[in-house]
Image (cartoon, rainbow, N blue to C red; front, top):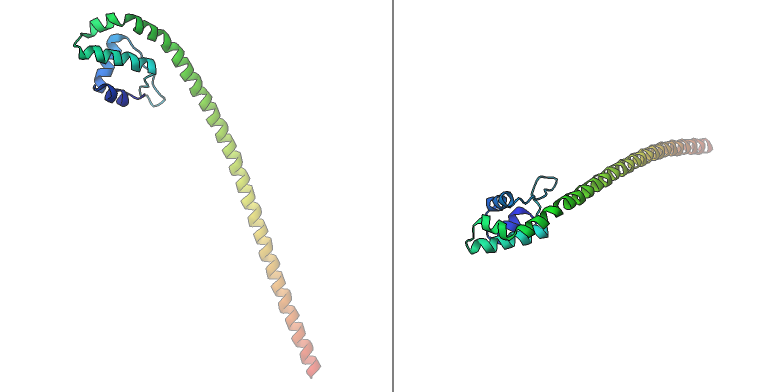
Length: 150
């Protein structure tokens, strides 16, 4: 979940989320654009924090009450970041392969256009030759009909 979505869901400001992260020692992974991405476990933790804050409990007391939840979340982070990085590398590899494939397709298309251009040029030359032959045939027929009439 993106930061803006979570802030709206909890009815708090974005700065409040960042304060909770800092004071509770919660590290939130970021996407490749640098935006925070809140996993379900963090959303659940922050929902608890928001509820306790509505009861006007100070963050120090909340941190003590949720110490076990925060510790469990802290062990999840390296695993989540590892999976995120693996997925990012895999996607980058797929994008590189796709770019190479697209380049090959583009070369094939260029070659096909070149062949089409060549065929069109041959057709144009054949049509011109046929036209010349027809004109020559018509001229011969006229000459033959003139000779026959004279």
